[in-house]
Image (cartoon, rainbow, N blue to C red):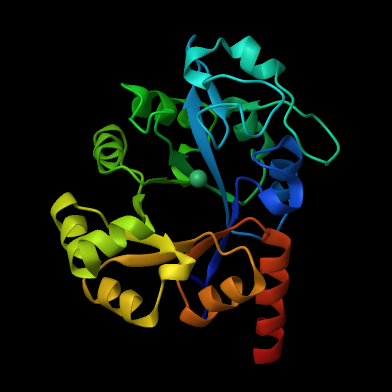
Length: 258
Ligand code: FE
């Protein structure tokens, strides 16, 4: 959470630039987010075969564009030519990392950068230092928090940068390993923050995490009840595909309190 005056505010992260409002990882969504009162913009990075870095959720272009193929096996020009399938106006191709940095150059919205695995679920070899370098070159590293579902990727991040990185804990990991197991792994791995799917979050889980010294956040709070739940729990931060709705709900609560 963020302290503003003496009020603690749950941070909102516009997920992939606000997928349900602007399409998935679109130019329109990131531009809109840069001008919003959200605290963070969440996005995912993938390498191309010729060493560029693309901002896209999936490891392939199959689901979200008119083009098929794994980004890491394609040349940047070919990825760039894909048309992102969304209803919004404006530039409609996948963005390079440096373009995302440029969009947010003058925005107070900070980066929440997720390092994704390849289309087989494995970390891209040697990718983390390149992603870190790209954000540094774009002038945004100093305000970036990283995230990943993969413990090996979090280890790579710890080697590559001093910037904070949080562990995205999937529902299956949480149920299989258990809350105590997740906390123990975080302790052993030097992880300072965890984030769980909003539907698996609870006051008890948050309390156990915070008692263990972990910051606690949620992801995928897209519907109004999920956003309300995240705000009721008072989590540090949550990601949402509906940043405009989340802001309206948070603002209404702040006005009621005032
Ligand atoms: Fe993500």
